[in-house]
Image (cartoon, one colour):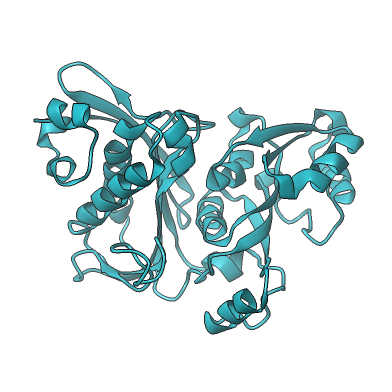
Length: 333
């Protein structure tokens, strides 16, 4: 893939973030998600790729755009798989909380796992723990191994986990061991990526979340030299059959990085919608301008770029075309 695509795709996540940010705290997650999706789809038309959405907003009959199988881009560039989450954390934006992102990953055609929409058990770590832990171990063994590898006592480890009832047993085990826990209200991709950024203070990410989000996180971790291991969690025969239909012969096997994002190049971009662990949110300035903070990474070069951009909103035609709160619509003319 051409290196210029890195800066092209960050423009796509910026567009989605700018479109959804006006909905922060307004209590309408569907409108926020719709605005992000519409803006992202419009911006894709300017990107020189022949892309196919493999992780998106759902099947063709479930989503009007960015559906699985949809072709995106100018269609005259390299053939790539596209994984998107226009607004990762719809509930976060609705409530005005932290860690909402617009997320996008691309890789050569056939490289990204077509992950079914179901839960995936996950274990994510940063570069220091890559290759040293196993999702098949009991949590107490995982924590013991991590503490030894990092050279610090168990009591100094911090595990991030989604605050969900399904994690009650895991949380109890972690507390009995004596590790510190940082809860996420939402934001599965943020959680899995956080151990690869030392400034977050997170050592491991554990628990279950969406399988599509697992592939997006694995794309980021490939660029960061981190690691994500996963196991799909089909809840019934229908979900089991769905896995097989999507080419996953053994739905309960451990999925490693190569299974999820392949062995070739990957480009990952994310733009903060609300402030979070490693990205700032959209910040409105004077004179109809807004600031965004993004990260864009490439696996081949291990380059990680932080991009701070100031946008003059009246010059963003896609904002005129998406749903927006009344106040925002007036402010951008």
